[in-house]
Amino acid sequence: MSFPLHIAKRYLRSKSTNNAINFITYIALIGVILGSASLFIVLSGFAGLKDFTLQFTSQVDPDLKAEAALGKSFFLTQEEISRLENLKDIVNFSKIVEERVFLASDDKNTLAVIKGVDEHFQNVVAVDSTLDYGSWFEQKSNQLVVGWGISNSLSLGVLNFTKPLTIYVPKPGKGQITSTKNAFNSIKAINVGVFYINETLNDTYIFAPIDLAKNLLNFESNQISSIEFKLNDGADENQVKNNIKAILGDKVILKNRTQLNDALYKMLNTENLAVYLIFTLVLIIAFFNVIGSLIMMILDKKQSLNTLFNIGATVKDIRKIFFFQGSLMSIIGGIIGLGVAFIITFLQKTFDLVMITPSLAYPVAIKTENFFIVFFTISILGIIASRIASARITKTLVHSL
Image 1 (cartoon, one colour):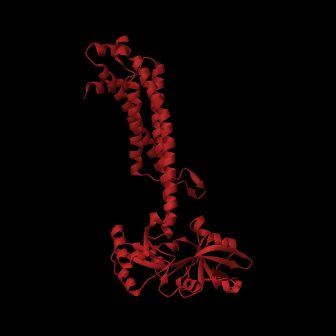
Image 2 (cartoon, helix red, strand yellow):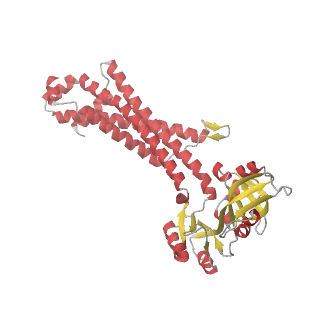
Image 3 (spheres, one colour):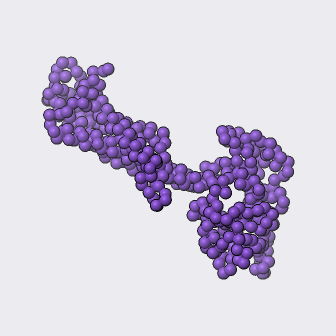
């Protein structure tokens, strides 16, 4: 063990004869503990909110999605379907037809997005778990499953045959529209289920059999909007992308779940970064107490420092003593703070101490990377604060002591 580190550890354990200096030191240590604990708790809270938010997208978003590179649709041949079925890393895939539509029921109407899906869709995403009431539709039927928001806007029930839902979509073509009857394709359908995912999806989507959607949009039998894939656990995503691309070519663009929710991920990551920077600023303010306590300690130990200097210790060695003392104080405070924060976070995760609603606890997630982020932040700030304080020691100051 080096001489400066040995002296720093002794100074850290010993109390000053001046109670005011002891009080300032305790305040500085408590500030580091509370700062590191607060940073970890907030990061865990945002990690929990992120997981909570993304769990809804995972219910309706596939592992991979192939979208049309040009336009809104592309053609899928039977040979391509067979080759996709033979890819070993793909558990299942579903053909999708998707378009914006106009919904009307009695005197109420709204805009929505119809998503026509085939019989494999339920094996690709866990859409069944989102059904609030009712059941999933049958293929080769005029049945629908609508979002909770749409159901509420149109006052739709389930299996209400006296109140069918009419779906309108503009007819493709060119030229001037001379009649509203000739301007739209329309289909009457019955709602058989209501799903609840999140506010945006509840107010936007309706699910329908793929044949109904194709008839409504005048699609050909092999024309679709996209293909959604479910992959094997542990599958190499990049390799699967390359295999799909080799089959479908440049007519599609492949996106994973993160890319499908690019705006959401950016928003969550930006919020997380903003909170980290705000709490880091709070920690920087707290470390001014560390600087102050070290400077007060330097003045309190003036006789000891003079003795050390006279027996051969250099100014550099004396600076190292207080640099190590401040760094150790910061690291120890950070570790204690992390321990306190881990206990609080674990208790919240286990016993639901803080509730958002009577039935929903505030979500938290204990992430390994957050331990390293907090410890790294505390260590860097502690080293900088200790360097600033120890730099106050000069040869002139030591001689004057």
